[in-house]
Image 1 (cartoon, rainbow, N blue to C red):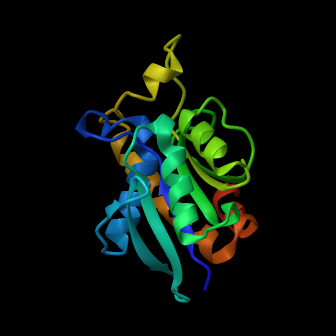
Image 2 (cartoon, one colour):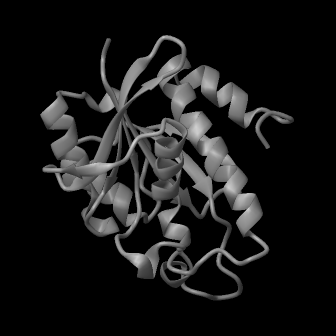
Length: 195
């Protein structure tokens, strides 16, 4: 069976751990906990582990780049090369300013919307045609610079809802592997579906 890779974007270190920008990394941490695996350092510039998804035990690599957000593409490219994974089986999980707080949206390709992690992945993969699991983190208040907003931690009031969103995004990533984009979009984008 063909191997997939699910990459959660974030910044390394305790200083950034709770930031909105790190929600993609939190999703991969949730997948690691769900599958009872420990992420281990990979020579491609990431921590990673292999998991088996669903009753069919579809093989997937879950990974978090160990460099900063704007260098994420290097790790994604190296993992894809090492395991011979084409962009069509690359899933990138990331924070998204342009959808409502806590919502999960999925797409294939498209622009980067000013997201430096996605810009790096697209440049180093040589294509924008990879799958994305987008986790809504809300919009900056007032005139706050979006670059400052994404480096802020979730508030205490937001923590419970974002924890639910992280679990839903982990579900969405697994559903992409098991069922493909259209079926997963129908589940997560439908009114009355997953939020």
